[in-house]
Length: 527
Image (cartoon, rainbow, N blue to C red):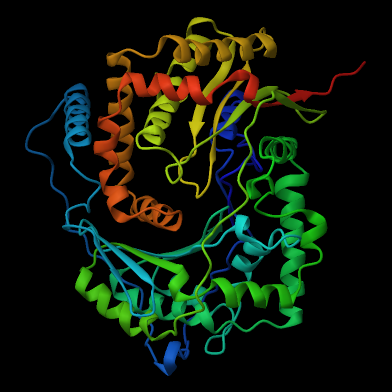
């Protein structure tokens, strides 16, 4: 599947939601994951163990049954309002006092290198007998050779084919047999594969992932069949969705020189030409232990994980040394550009305005944190300025928000977006949203506004740790885009140190309306 960290296809609308809710979700998640072909978990009972990396046989564990003790009634009946207040207060204290993004109920995060150059991060969390195992490769669509767009995402699909040791589908069945889940995603700067399983199955997952890191077997027939799947995915996720078509065109306009201007899934005419030779070259260059990061989060001990990693991944040979990921630099942008798409399938118009801004990897100290808080103040949730002013007070928008995508290897984007209410004009909504941006650039924000934004941001960061996959992804994406474990752990403190002057400065420096790109999605009306 594709992790759409750029303006690609919006999710299929949910019929159970009203149009305003769907629109808001689409714009807020314009960079959401998009599933590729579903992995079929076939029933399997009498399965022989396949030969994993280095000819080691691993007996596949049976499904884990967890016995839960009966729960008794609480001795005191507490009111719902008391519980809500106590929970909110505790969350605020934890979010604003936790010194680092550390492991939940399990000790400090461990970080070490295997001899072959593979980095391993272990995030202990003993609250439940579950572990998330992720392998992140430091390669994405922005690393593709010219004329080979889509090869990174294409190869993500091919990684689910057979190896010299295991038949296609064996890995998926092993995950299903223990009641686990698995998937993968491709982004501009990385490709990741992940499984969530009982801890007893961790060694087996490592064996399977290590095996397909170097032992994949690809025939012309396998490659050509999967290429047809990718082409159909492109038709369904991009070409048949007006929002996605517009988003691709906006990206190609926003980025003048950067590889981010090319959609992760690739251009249709280039996908059609991808072949086994292209896939093999990409595999041999990028799928090596010294170009990968392993993140294990859950009910595990760091020393035990290290032992298992050395037993599986550690036996893989180090790959060729890769050159630094130096890409074309985006030139200074000094014009306002617009992209308009009208389509009969569109019932609710919307707009989005984007700016090229620095990411956490490219920003000066404090700038990315200030941009994150600026997005929170402008359009992070229903308490933000855009929502309160445009949706609540003026009533001219069904939704409005802002987003800063900080985890990019190179420069990134800052976006504001919205959709007008039934009796409002899109131009009036856009002008009102622009006015909120200009007001911060001119007048700044108050200390109280900033403190509230910090609290909201840190609460989200804290609650994000409850999902092992989210916590593991935070480490994986950061380490795959030039960051370190210390960068992840130090983020809460860096957020706290941001000043109102820094927020005003980044708004004035980067969010200039005459240096932006705006996309309009409009319904097609009869003349």
